[in-house]
Image (cartoon, rainbow, N blue to C red; front, side, top):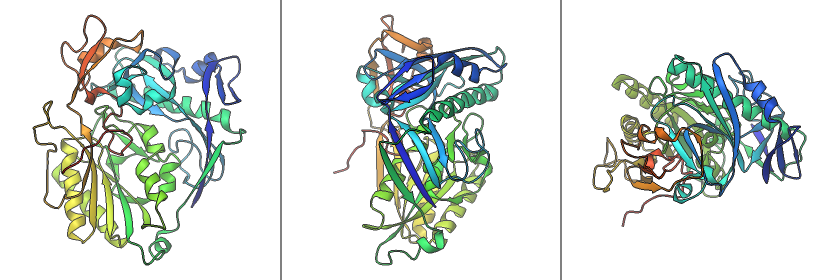
Length: 427
């Protein structure tokens, strides 16, 4: 499979009469977009812009999505939701870079987050560096949580697909090619290089803990092989409301830095064989089953080493360690990517589970670290929810508009795909 990803650099965003891109500026017909997104379960919907350096706070953040359009080849954008179920990962796709769609509104689940576009909080989230189209969506009273989540999810996906269409006929500023051979061919490529794979753990622990693969809730799947080009072409999207710091927003799936780096050194330092997507489970039996299937697939691919990335913390730590142990027992060396919940003083046990075999671990930081976010001039969403969201507490929101929270509350601050600036070293 060969995917050509055309990157269109967006320099600014404005509201105008027509939705189009000219000289790197994305103009948006706001009313047309609102009309497209309207549906009976939505009571009120507003669209605002938040740009780097603006003294704007977005809270609570549901999802962040990069607008894209499929311009050639099979499938379409966000398969299983916007497009059909045809396999993606080949052909040509255009992505609007430097911008994103952000969804917010009255809280779905307490584990949602904050994006500050300026101030100290902006240093902890990658999304403060983007030009953001922020959609605030208030749903009808009494709507069940799972429907509320579904409404906001589809609002974000529809908006990203609509804005992506503006890039269909635009010549990209850069084209990056990702190629993945059939697994039986990939295994035999570069015989002198170590065979490396990627174990991609997806949050799937129940209601409001959902991730979708081609529209299928990951809790309903067994571990499976997927081409990394499919991931880069939007086959996986977020539907969860877990802690903001290490939740993989859809944007992270679209721009997975683990896959990017594996491609970067493929054929030079190692042979990147492919990706195994697996879920994170609630029951012990399901954890055992999925980790066993994961290890067996890795063995069948003749992997010599694997990178394993987690999503979330606590209960998923058990899935992470089970994957590690079973891979290592088959002679497959592992590197784990996680974050830590080590207490505000950093002195507590970092993970809920551990193993002597987990001797190569990359951390994205301690999510319990306290921080004070300064007051902003504008809030998109509802700032009072700072006392409720994960990482906040009664009294987090101060009278002057500042917020004292753990960085757990900041969207993407300890992202376990490495889409962050934080880590730690052991000496």
